[in-house]
Length: 279
Image (cartoon, rainbow, N blue to C red; front, side, top):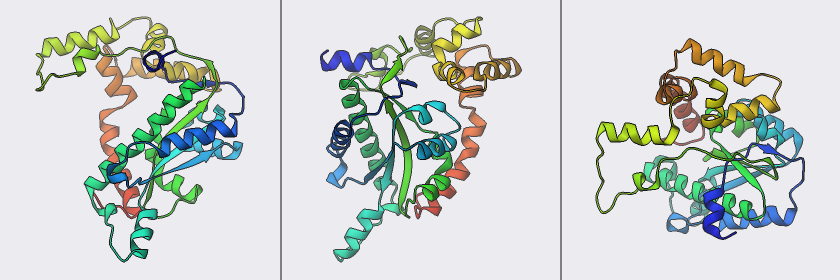
């Protein structure tokens, strides 16, 4: 398979075989993360490699009980790391104030995601699957304490990796020419935007099971791997919230707008606890 086909066919995998990943492959995954683009080549990232059952179970707890994190033989916690840089600059008789700079933070986060995506692509070439888990950001304090993460280091993303037991066939996406703008931003009409998302998701399906399989594969996989019937819970919430279209499903149930905004306070405080004063 050429690189284009590999990247086009990539899917987030949440069902893994109980098969250990060879140390040589893990080492190569770390090497391509280390070789990712970095602003100023500062490399303000660290990766905590989790393979032991105890760590996997605890990490699963921190990300809201997502069972694939525990079931994956490998998880990588990607961290913005200014601790190492601050120690180095202090030793070098200079000053680094990245924890007080929004620009440094944004560049570091871009570096982190570039490194993680390098891992995703190399993992695919080895026949491995992976899934990003961002909900670790709601438990920064707990994660830092459990994994002995020092001040000026922020755990921002988990990448769970393993040999796939199953791979989702399709995932709805916008047409690629909709996200590409030639020379200047092209402003679409409200009707054109609505049509673009209708083309992405199709009609809002009254068959909830079929809809979830198309638009919320996580709840299908979670119900297979967990004692709790997540499908049943989601169906109950959809009925309670009177979900009638795709946007309502996303921003009233999956990522409730009010709850996402309220999370700001907790995250900002966690940043401050880690020594970051950018908000």
